[in-house]
Image (cartoon, rainbow, N blue to C red; front, top):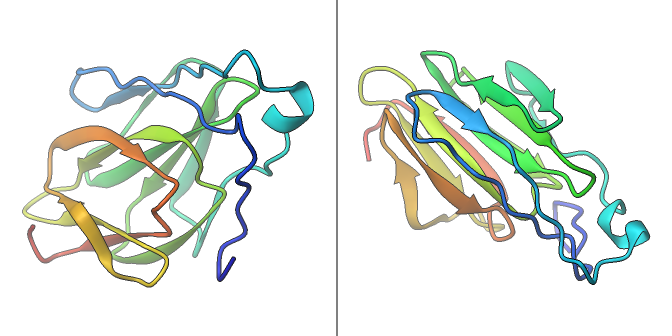
Length: 151
């Protein structure tokens, strides 16, 4: 399916909660009851290219998004999730970012966090200004970009 390997099996989606607290994300995964164990565990761990500054796995706990970073949470069906902390400007290719997860742009000044589709086109409402967080459906997102250009 193009540049990014993905699993489209039923039941791989998950829901991740985001606390409203300043720069704190909480991963809470819910897996559909009708998904088999094999289906829920089929996808490899998410990754990016190039690598982010830091990746933290949280088995259901809270992970901070440090100042100056942009963070993206990716749930895993077995519980918990990964939080990717991006620091350097540039475009990051996403691998196995599936389901719905929190994003938080905790960068300084007017730096933006942007989301692009498989063709490298910014998606509708795909720009997050600093100090803003929300939930995002990862399925159509293939790249994250950190830019100095404001939204």
